Structure formats: structure tokens, C-alpha cells
Image (cartoon, rainbow, N blue to C red; front, side, top):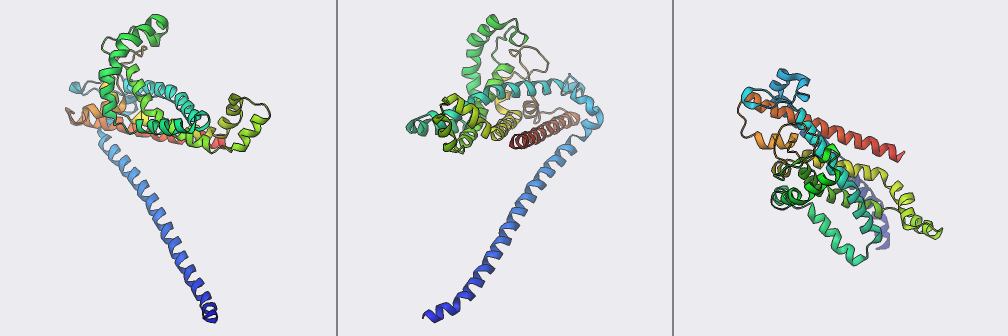
Amino acid sequence: MPARAISTTPHARARRKRIDRAADRTLRGLCVAASALVGLLIADIAYQLLHGGSLAMSRFGLGFLAAGAWKPNFDVFGAGPLLFGTAVTSAMALAIATPVGIAIGLFLSMFSPRPVRGVIGPLVEMLAAIPSVILGLWGILVLGPFLRDHAEPWLHSSLGFLPIFGAPETSGSSVFTAGLILAIMVVPIIASISRDLFETVPRELQEGAAALGATPWEVVRGIVLPSTASGLAAAAFLGLGRALGEAIAVTQVIGARTGVHSSLFEAGDTLASRVASQFDGSVSRLHTSALFYLAVVLLVIGLAANLLAQWIGNRFAR
């Protein structure tokens, strides 16, 4: 028996190597196919958007991006106010959600007791599972009236000398409300990624700094944040992508008004919201093409944001 086992061992090893090589080739083929499928899908989406928006592109050109009028009944379209609304709401959401999400990640990974971490962590992640239409309804029924009756008048009376806190609207539907809704939607993304990043920082570095007399804030500022800066930048831009593309919740609370206003309390609109609210009810072929043009602009902005995130991450990594 020992002699037979020894004699068959080289054959078994060779067979095992052939199986491993076949498995490696299969896995490589599946990965290449998946990557190619994603590339083809993105290319097809871009083609369909460009094809659908070709009429508006040939009619308006790049001037479409700066034009301010949107009058479907007169075949007059411009994306300027929509670009402005998209930029303001997304910037507001990112400005609020990034520090809040990072703070939640720090608390869950470094400062919270384990029982508390086990409760708050899933709750934060469950916030991301709430459908956007539900958040939009909550914005209409709860957040909007509260802002209209309490927050906006107080901000106007205290900081009304700043243009962004000018005279508040009375309906509660405003750019300010939309920005807060987007911030609520972005916080779980940034918080979840931040917590995972902070947990990868070696404990030895943190304990060594604490042993040398560093305070918890000095440990966070000098070790934790620099070690995870590239990942935090990527998390913020991932949240930005969610804010740029959100349509339903924004449509419900922003007011759907075309215009560029200095006050956050005025109603407005965004690229995604305008496409979602008017595509099914377009009144002409040019109107539909203009909505496709808006989608093309939104796709370009999203791709640019992702490329910028990669550039920032690589720069931090170096």
C-alpha cells in the first residue's frame, strides 16, 4: 500500500495542476467577460443618450448649457438653471454629509462601546435602504413644514444679511430642503465606508501614539485621518455621485421652478429631477431630445466626478 501511494503521487499532483490551470483560465475569462460587459453597457447607455439627444444638440449646441429659459410649448430649452440647482444641492449635501459621516465612522470604529456599536451601525446602514420616494414623502410631510415654520425664519432673521439666507419661501419646497434630503441619503454611504477604513488602521500605531502622550484628537488627526485620506476622498465622491443622480426625492421637495436664485430658500430644479418629472409628459420631439441632452450632461458630470475621485485618491496615496 505505501509503495502504491508513492507511485500514484506524481500523477495526482500533475492532475491537480491541470485542474488548477483550467480553473485559473476559467476565472480569468469570467473576469474579462464581466469587465467587457460593463464597458459595453456603459457604451450602449452613452450611445442611446447621444442618439436621443442629437436633435437638441444640433439645434442648441453648447449654448444649451448656459441658456436659462425652459419653455416646452415654445421649443425653447436651456440647462443653465438646472446645472445651477444640481451644483448647489449636491454641494450642500456633500458639505453636510461628509463631516457627519466621518464623525459617525470615527465614533463607531474608535469611541463607541461594542454594544452601542452593534445597534447604531446597522441603523445607519438601514438608513441607506429607505426608498427615496419614502424620504421624499417625509420631506413633504415633516421636514418641509418644519423648515418653513421654524428653521428658515430663524436662519433668515439671524443670517439674513447673507444672500443664501434671503427671504424664505412659504411653501417649504426649496433648494434648502432638497439639499438636506440629499445629505440624509449620502450620510450612510460615507459613514459606512469611513468606519471600514478606520478599522483598517493598525492598532499598534494608535496605541503607540497614545503611549507617547497623544490625546485621542491628536491620534485621529495625526494617524487615522492621514492613513485613510484617499479612501475618505473616494467615499465623499461616491456620495456625490448619489447626490448628483437622485431624482425622485428631489422632485418631491425642490419645487420644480426654473431659475437662478441666490437664496437657498427659493424653489429650483436639478438635471435629474427635470428628466424624471417631464420625460413621460414631453410635448414634442424636441422636448424629448432636450431631456436626453440633460441626461448626457448628467452622465458627463458623473464620469468627471469619478475620474476626479481617482486622481485625488492617487495623489493622497503618493
